[in-house]
Image (cartoon, chains in turn orange, red):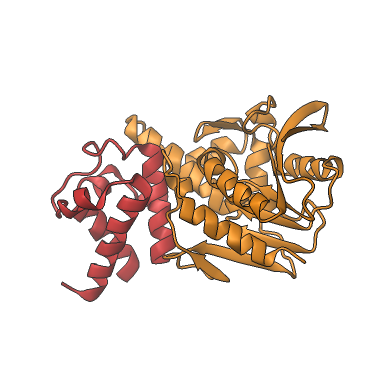
Length: 232
Length: 89
């Protein structure tokens, strides 16, 4: 079902599958364009979990997906507060948070016993990718620019990065955003990644594809790994 | 061919397949001189950024954005040479 949660005077949407199931997972999607690119994957994994009697909640963060909040008003702190409000209004107890990519930056927003992360990315890495996209676009347009100039501009006025208008406050948050540290956290990555993980799943990084494939096998592996880690 | 270079070329081809969605059949026809940027419609600016970051993740390297110019993406050969320099020094 599609639910609504209220945050800061706005009504935001969330998708809740299997709200009567005994266990509930809050999913935090990646930020910005990667959110769109992974939506099919997340929904496919959610449907598989529903069949296994595990409920899942997928929120729209303010300023993302169907939200009416403007890009320039987005901040990491505001997103954390929004997730806290959503958890309080969802009517269920969250057993676990499952965060994808940059979503892991917010996985301390809600109290729960365990966390699960897929290919987590911290603020500086996300910012680097966003700046890199802008630099590539500028190069393609024949504009000469440099990372240092772009960052100097981003620190004192709104700039557009990868299709999103970002405020200096958000840039500063991203520059300093580290992944929260937890006792009980499981990290999964894709095979081929050079970074450490608890397990590696086979599949392509759909979040980097402009027209992502519908990879059912990857969705199933994600659902199975989540089901094995959710507290009993 | 040096074993390290072979691994880098294999990784570059895998990233072209995984990130840009170029089929293995098409990739099999790619050689060192095959043009990339401007010749592959899949390779737009957003894709360039994703491709560089994916290469970093898989090869465990850091690519400085100010070192990146259009010439890196001229051909498959130039991209492999750039990645090899970063990965093997």
